[in-house]
Image 1 (tube, protein in one colour):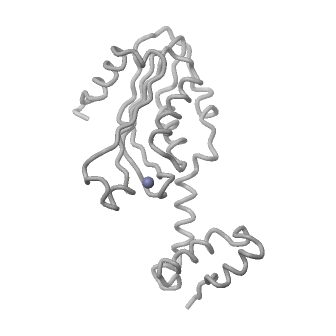
Image 2: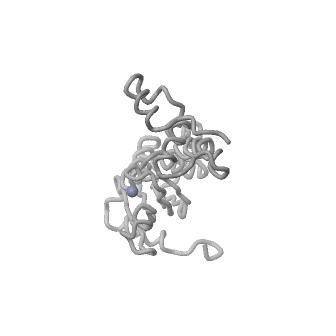
Image 3: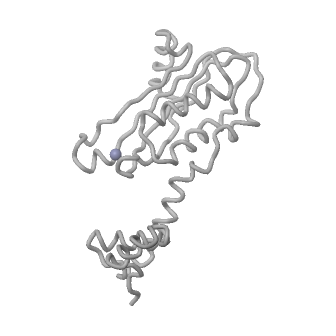
Length: 209
Ligand SMILES: [Zn+2]
């Protein structure tokens, strides 16, 4: 049976000498498994460090992506100045305090001023920021700011409704409560525009979605 490559004592010695960077990500996860009280060499766990490494690199791939780059090439000149709204965008992220998931729905709206963003790019933009360690408030704000910077519309509104496993699993939050955050820029700070956005968010979509 494979032995754990790293044991605590060896890690402590090596870390003192050369720092944690001497170890691969998988070795560090293997060490963590031992510290949780597990046997990293047992069947079910042998491949876990490599699976966790892959999963975490997927869940944090947003660090390598540039939101401006994603929007570039998807901006179109238009003569339209009504509210554009993309709602119920699925979002999965990791909270930066516990590295546990929070997930929910993002609703994005803006009122153009000469330019619009290709509709499929809005969920991509959400994804770039969600695939990083986040707090919900900052995620909300970053989405709004990226749209504002890209097309300088009359205004942008972003609302996120999410549930946080770090709260639910630790019993801090009731199982069915969710956290709502919003970022309103430009004309979305006006009462009527904001109210129109929020009422559109609450309306069921086509097919009752
Ligand atoms: Zn948390």
